[in-house]
Image (cartoon, rainbow, N blue to C red; front, side, top):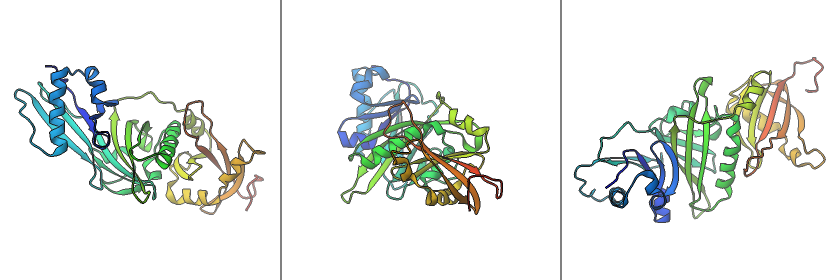
Length: 319
């Protein structure tokens, strides 16, 4: 009998929706496949898979775990802040458990664009949130690597247009307070209620490492500008980098109230636009343009480059 010595996490919502044991991750790495399609690669033989399934089924149905003589069994539940069970982390092996990878669960309300995080370490995102505390999406993405905005835009598009039960996933990285990188991999299940309310239930795994790009941040770092990235279709602020970053919700709201994203759809001005705005009473030039990517995504984010214009300095900003 072959049972892998490692932590394996089951997507509870996906398993219940499909009727097939769905593996979220294993050994601290992405899987996102039904157990029947990945059991061999994970190190199970037929008997080992049957035992693992039996333990998982007992946990999922609240029944007694079958006898597992000579095996070490350790299970942990990941529950979203609203009480929804989203993940089951399992160790079933002939060897004792090793330290678990870090997992968080989260629930995202697409009507209010707010999220709540629970699990091993909600502080990973660096926005000061407490377990279960409701925070805006902008707060969640305060320290997001700008290159990951394409993935975030794709996630929002799928979540706002997809059907109930849809599986959405993305890699993303954060650098809270410009210190060390935090690398994450998330999957989420879209639930659409009878009254069409959309909610995402997610599982996030902290990755040991991940290859990332940092071109946008490097360009802005050596200028006096601030970059705000937004999802244009639904006007969702994502993250900011540069001199004034993080902008915070108040300043971002001021900017979003003044900018004209409709101008980006003007066929006579396909490259973008420039507007004079004020932030905290100070004059700024906001250069607005879509970011294009060759990578397949559902749409692209919009960049708003903010440059402070001193009164009487002869800049193009007015007012």
